[in-house]
Length: 177
Image (cartoon, rainbow, N blue to C red; front, side, top):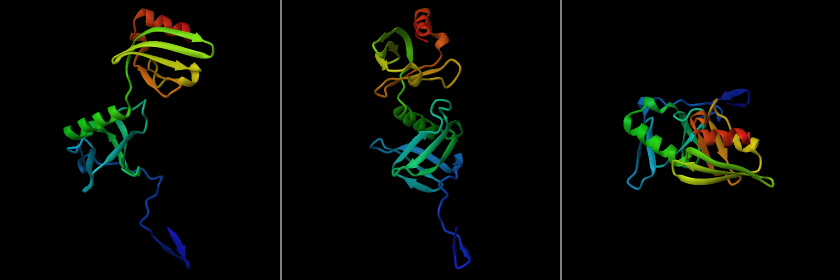
């Protein structure tokens, strides 16, 4: 709102802090023939959409921010399970692309060399190495048994439940921490 000569004019300007919840019946998402994530939101077609998890580690299928190609938020999907099957599948696929996060299946070794921690890991996508300067800054604990590892270059891996790892892996983890 603006005040001009004591008269309040209402402007058609969105409050940048207002959260717009998208109704599941008013949205549909799909992929173009070229593979671009697209959708129809409240009757308006968007040829390219971008998704972000508002709480990326805690709620992987809830609170999904939907944005246009300019990065402007159009609204929030509260839970993708409330959407139609095609929309749910396409959102899930798009989020997998954006939040690529290999799952750690085994910790081969964790060694400290000079000021670096070097983790040799087996993941669901094969072996990898994570290098960290400081364990506390590069490890996140979104829940009791879940750990997200991030190396100095931004590469990430997930230990979904450290208690379900094999004995050798748990021992390596306990020794490092």
